[in-house]
Image 1 (spheres, rainbow, N blue to C red):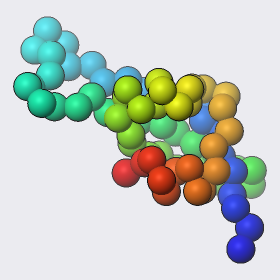
Image 2: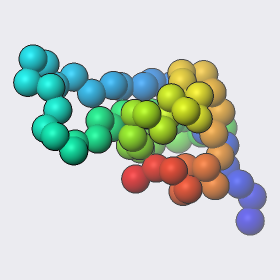
Image 3: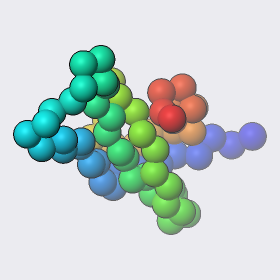
Image 4: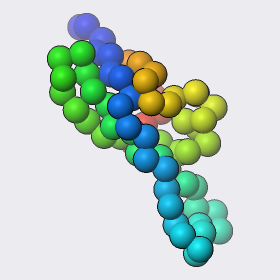
Length: 71
């Protein structure tokens, strides 16, 4: 089976305003992904993990990576 690749076209970081996050709550980032054939999907992963993986707008990720790291 062929692995599909997606380009990160939008990255939305959490904004909890002045309340911040609850103790133990992990901030999640939402990625909007566009496939090679134009299909769009969104996924979430921990903000710190996205930063560590260097996943930012314009980066290409595979189905395998998405399945491994995203919810």
